Amino acid sequence: MSVEGVNGIGKTTAARAIARRVGARCLLLDELTDHSDGGGFARNVIAALSARHDPFLRTGHPAAETLALLALQLRKTERLTATGTAGAEIVLEDRGVDSVAAYQAAILAQQHPGVSLIELAQHLLGSTRPWRRHPDVTILLTGDTAVCARRFADRIGRPLTAGDLALLTQIDAVYRRMADDEPARYTVLDTTGWGPHEVTDAVGEVVVSVLDRRSAGVS
Image 1: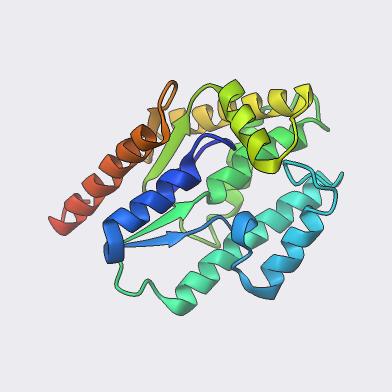
Image 2: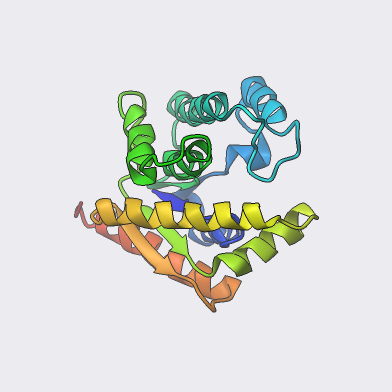
């Protein structure tokens, strides 16, 4: 299971709160770009992507950035396979392959005018299928991207440009199209006007529902 959404939507706060709430039944996979917990490989990749201090990890080489981010996602899966889930009933991932597909499709498209964003996102997503299993449940948080941008800017300590805000809005639109294409996998929560506790409670309801279904043997 993964929690997705644009920067500032509240997914990381919700995922961590739910992991604490659910306890040993849930194993949280933090976002690698936040914590660099994938070993030396991940730290080196993130350092390279962060070299220009761009809020979207842009270095001027979007194809290479995309491959690097996909490699981080595959590395995350390898580490989980190697260490196991420690008896947890559910793995809750703070951003997974869907995030790379949505963000990098929007970034790559800036260098290729006229390309279909959703087709590009689906191509990126499909390229990972031979290497890792996609989440069986993906919770997509959507909302007011202007509010998300302000929260994101506060977190990184600098304002976003008009171009950054436009990119964030475009990424949100790609996420929504991806959800439309896979309604059986995605649960979309519109968090417009919600506070952190309301977002956490809504995501928590989905997580607990999945846990209860699995406990009852229902797929």
